Amino acid sequence: MNNIINITLVLFLCSFLAGCSQDEKIDGYKSEAAALCDVFNPKNWTDLPKNIEPDEIQKRVRDKLSAALKSDEMQKIINAIPHVKRDMRYQFYVEKISKLIHEPHECQAMKDYLTLQYK
Amino acid sequence: MAIPVKYIGNKYAKNNTQQNKNHGANPREIPDGNLKAYQPFNTSTILKINYFVWINTPVVAGRVFTTTQGRRLVLEANNNRVIYILNTQGRDNNKLYIQPASGFIADVVHFPYEDAGRKLQPIKKLAEYEVQLLIGILSTTSWSAFSLVLGVDILEFSVKNKDNFPRWNRIIQACLSTRKDLIKYAPTLYDKLVYSTLLIAWEGTTYAGGKKGEISSAVINAALDDPKISGRGAGIILGKLGTSAADGRISVMSAIWTVLFTASTKLITAIPSAIKSTTEGIKEASLSEKVDIADKIISIIRKSDIKISKEDALTIADEVISNRKELTVSLKTLSEAFKENS
Image (cartoon, rainbow over all chains, first blue to last red; front, side):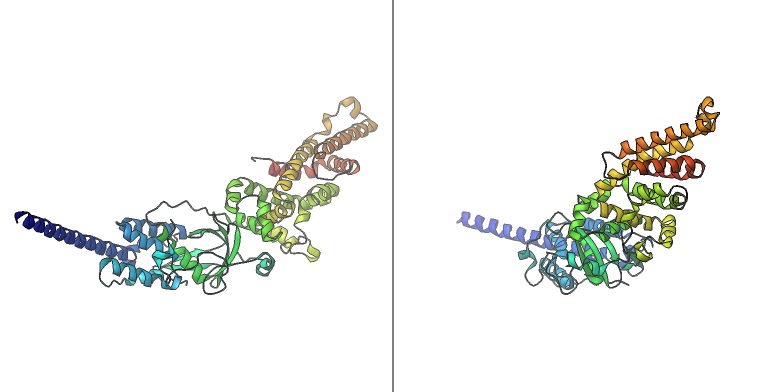
C-alpha cells in the first residue's frame, strides 16, 4: 500500500516538474520572440551611418539576430524564412512563433522589415 | 543548412530553383539567345533599398550580394529590375538572371535570417572598372562562351586577376594615349603592333562609338580620363582574343617595347667617331642598327600569333630610329604599361 502511495507521489512530482519545465521553456521562447522582434525596432538602428554599405547592413542584421537567438527551435524558424514564398514570410513567422509560445504573436517591426520596399 | 519543405509546409514552400520562373518577383534566367536584348547594360543607374525608414542603401553595378541561392554580382540595377550573375556551388553557377527589383530586395534583405547564428563569408566588391571589364568581355561573346573565356568562376576570375585588372586597364590607356604620336611618327608600328594586335578587337563593337565601327575620338578621350571606359575596352579585347591569347600578345609586345625604347634612347653619339665622321658611315651604322632591331622583333614574335613580316620589322625599326626624339616618351609609356608588376 505504501509503495503505491510512493509511486503515485513520484509520478505526480515528475509531471508537476515537467509542467514547470515546459512553462519555463515557453517563457524562454516568449522572451526570445520579444528580443527577435526588438531587433527590427527602428529605435535600435538610429546609429546606422547614412552611407552604410548593403553588405554591412546584412552583417549587422545577422549579428543582432544571432545575439537574440537562444534556442534551436527559434533558430530553425528564423533560418527558414528566406525559403518561404516572399509574400508569406511574415505570416509564416507569426504562425510558427505563435505555435511555439502557445499564444498569438505579432510583431509590427518584423512585419515592416519583411515587407521592405525600395524607394 | 537545408531547410526541409516538410518543416516549412506546402502552403509556404517555394521552389528554390532559379529556372522556370516567369512570374511574380522571382529571378528568371536570361538565355544565351536573349542576352543582346539587354545589352548594353546601363551601369549608371541605382536601386535604393529603404532600410529602417531613413537609410537608403544602393544596389549598383559591381556590388556583390549574398542570398540563399548564392552570391550575386550586379550588372545593372534600377527601380524596375536587377540583372546579375549568380555565383553558386550548384548547377546554376555563372548564369545570368533578371529579377524584379522588389524580389531582389527581398532576397537580399532577408538573407540575414538564413545566416543568423552562422559565419558569414566576406563579400567582395568589384571596382567600377573591373565591372566594366567583365561587361566588356560579356559584350563580345555569348553567355555560355563567357564562362569559357574566363576559364573559371566569375568571382574567382576577378579575385585571381586582381593584379591583372589594373594592368590591362593601364595597357589600353597607354595604347590610346600614344596613338596620335604613333600614327604620326611610326604608322607601321602603330598599325602592326598596337592596332592589329590589340585595338582592332575593340572596333566594330557597340562600345567603339565611331562610324564604321571605328573607335571614336570621343571614346578615346573619355577612356583616357575614365578608367571605366578603358576597362570596358580592355574587357572587349580580352573577350575577343581570349584571356590567355591576349596575355601572350601582351608579353610579346612588352618585349618589343623594351627593344624599341632602348633603340629610341640610344644617342647617335654612341656610334664610334670614326664611322660618324662620314655621312656614309652614319648611314651604314644606322642600317646595321635597323637590321639588328628588325631581327630582334622577328625573333621575339617567332613563337607568338602576331604577324609581322621582315619588311615590316625593318620599316618599324626605320620609323623608330628616324623619329627617336619624337617617339621616346610614347615608347617609354608603352614599355612601362606593358611591363608585369609595373
